[in-house]
View 1 (cartoon, rainbow, N blue to C red):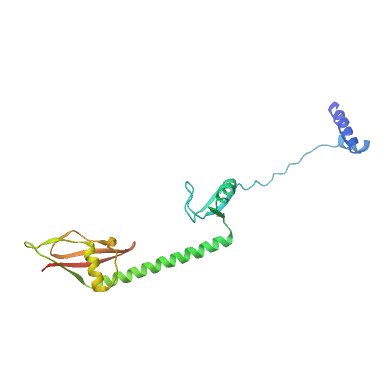
View 2: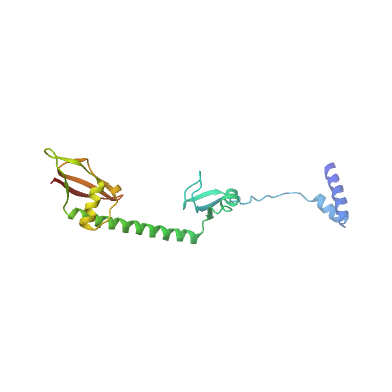
Length: 194
């Protein structure tokens, strides 16, 4: 009870400083003080973002990530390395992904058509100066095959996609042209001595 009167007295002096009355101070002193604390919604401390460029130790360009709000605000956003994901951005990303997928499919179909052309041509003939028996002088290289393809089919082929076995004798060999990661054309190469 002693603490209640001390509280009432201190409240009384406080109320007088604002022009309050004695009746108000008694109401404050007699009122049961019950504090009800409602749980507040926890603040969202992460942000869903898309990287605009590669960020070391975080991810690659176009990757969707959850990062701390401060890291996004203070570093990624200020440096222009990321942006917050919005429904419009997600829709745009989906359209871009579909466009890229269609382009990949088109390139694969072109590679398949080119493979059919290479395989239906028959054998490419390579002439080399002959030595003893089946031996030839030198060997047949990928560049030789590329030159023959260009002469016969008027098609430019990169020599890095040509895979040839080691050819040091006359005969028929199979060369592989890797036109696409999923499409490989097998062509026959006839090597003969003149």
